[in-house]
Image 1 (cartoon, rainbow, N blue to C red):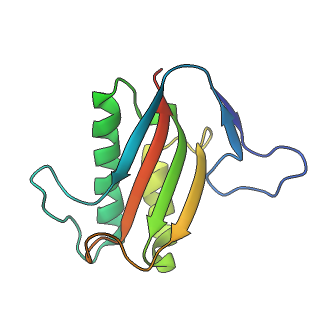
Image 2: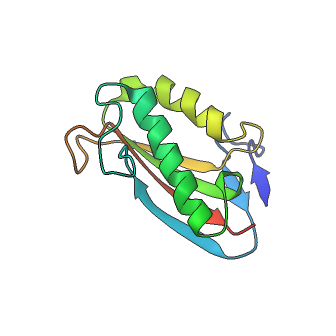
Length: 128
């Protein structure tokens, strides 16, 4: 896997790569939300707790598919409040190596499937 964080002629990044190239089997992870294993909402008004739960869920899905967060090549992040961006970035950096960040997209949405969800993240990874 090769991370192209700042190719010549592209703007600087903040925690993501402009492109990631790889070979191998692709794993597609559905959007993960801040629910625990019992289906309970985690961190109703706490964006860091919600983001941390989402990354725990991503980790579990990737593990089931035979890979891990180090092999994520693309994240798509949906936030209902851009004020949560700093919290998302802080938690993301607990789970994703900032020296090898995946390609990423961030989208502000007016709402998610449950009114208490502040964040949802889907991922593409390669089986390492």
